[in-house]
Length: 198
Image 1 (cartoon, rainbow, N blue to C red):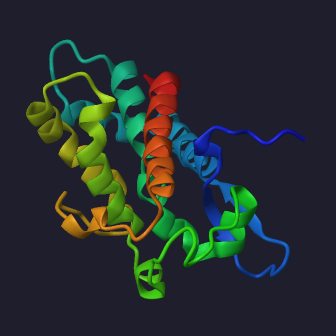
Image 2 (cartoon, rainbow, N blue to C red):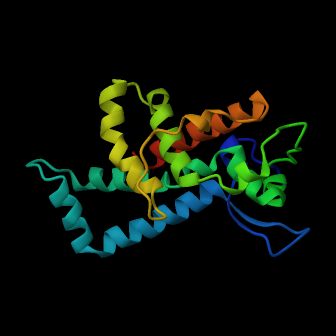
């Protein structure tokens, strides 16, 4: 079997630690699509849900199909913050299976506490807010304000509503190649989801 070399396929989204020596993990990109699939079913099956969105975005020329596409695009971005080495190291064996073995002292010097307490929801909000100007060829200030609430809603899926500030997120004690790998994966995920949904 040939391994996909695209960075978005080298991240785990769900991992089960109950199988030592035989890591059980689900690729992040597939997890994002699983969640979007559930949202698609919910959207299609619930006139009340559609009506709430239509009411929230009321305009005489509302394109419901386009609104649905944007909703699914953002829902699929809900775990954007998992595309960060600090999150991936929470399940070392899954990271090794998904990509490669990352050695402390060689590839990174990330403290165990920084790994354990890394908040992927908050990270998704911050990375999205910081990097969206690279993703879009639009005015950065206007675009940031338009995307802020959407990003906060989907990245806050564990019950928190995040603001985009977190200066420490850029202080990653890791090789530049790992940091760039994460950056490329986030860009790749957005591009793939844009192609799929928009």
